[in-house]
Length: 141
Image: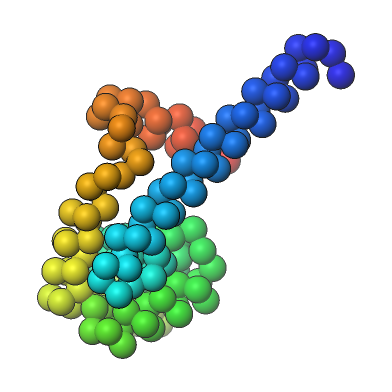
């Protein structure tokens, strides 16, 4: 491996470490804020993603997890009275996850808490936009 390749590989490892560190801080932040409502990090993430009715498959995609994991999370949220399953208006085989009034209220409070002290709050809005664009570009396949 030539010097340029070694330098590029080292820079890639450093960048991957930084992204992993940021992801860890964001996970810790979500976990701590969700716990204030007696929720797991996955439950908190699901509530945040449920801005509108969606299927379990859509929720799993938004949570970056397997549908079986999203089902488990949705089951717990349903048991807690935060969401309900309704018939899908266009697909009689599917159900939609819909927040209850209680779920909507908790979601709003959780979103407020998540914005306080977020690791990303250190970046200016313009910097957050640039980071969003760069990360989106790396994830598109």
